[in-house]
Length: 439
Image (cartoon, rainbow, N blue to C red; front, side, top):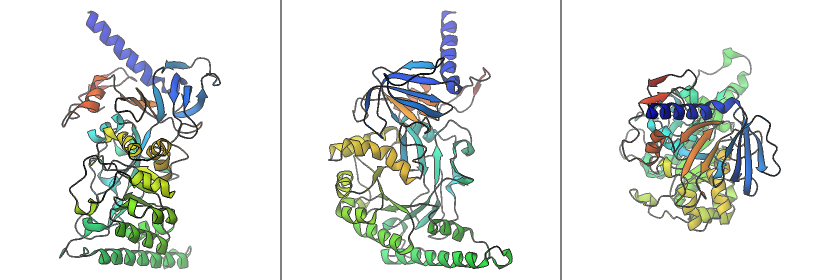
């Protein structure tokens, strides 16, 4: 009987915290790293309705009466991590029919019930850019997701007005080169030629639309691929460009200058060789920190000093996991390793949060702990760059989506391969049911 009562009390406590989202919640006595501004050693974070309503020194923040107070003494709170390049959700993009497929949407291939999403939550990731693969010059449209708890992809979508937020994935280098592979390029020069050809077609398609004006009878035949590339030319869709070698990086910069699209360089293994050129172009880079590199010849000159080199040159730097290349659960290590190899602490933490938010055009909503922004944050057991620190809780829009004290969540955070396969108990705090299914 005692065990039954204890179980009921634990369930009620769990539901009490989870259902407190419509109330005002105040985390007090925490060390807060807001990213914008200096760390607050004894801080208070107040949230209501999924938004941050106050943040600052505990001596100066007024907590509304009736608020739920959570003592976070000894804990560190920072913004939710933003992963600017991931492959969680088991989605696949373009197929082998052609090297450039801008009409393909990763939206149509993501499994929102994939345990990889739960792994990312346990790693403190609250927003992610899910990409199709890199085996094409253009493998399709990417998708920006909030890692809310949800059972279908619609639960995770981010909207920019009426438009589903996302970019588009391009790649160069060896991934898309296929000797004798039909329409695929056989050389680096041919790769750039094919991309240039498609952008010229998109310019012509846009010109036809412009000349047609409101006369639909003069519209060109609808072309989904061209529509997507016109969005790129009109700077409504960011190009996320997979690139490694310094010569490939420079090829991207030439294309960007020629067609004027917005671009984020991804991976940039040899960024240290052309850091000044990247900075001069004003183009951001999303880098990956791999503690055991190998497996691809064009990355043989990858350097752990890329972050420091780009920072020194004055370039804009963020980080990504390329999950599962880097496990989402260990994303915070990227900042720590970058600092170990010369990057400043401030820019490394900025790169995990605000820099990536800017790359996804979401910096007005996420990336820092500021009044009016989404209540996306992580609670840490200690300093974010310490190897001994654990992510204790992850919150998205004022709702807790990961709790290390929950045995099921703990298993996801620390378990090996297959640990996330058994998520058989779902606790619904709103109607009191306990039922089988995915959390």
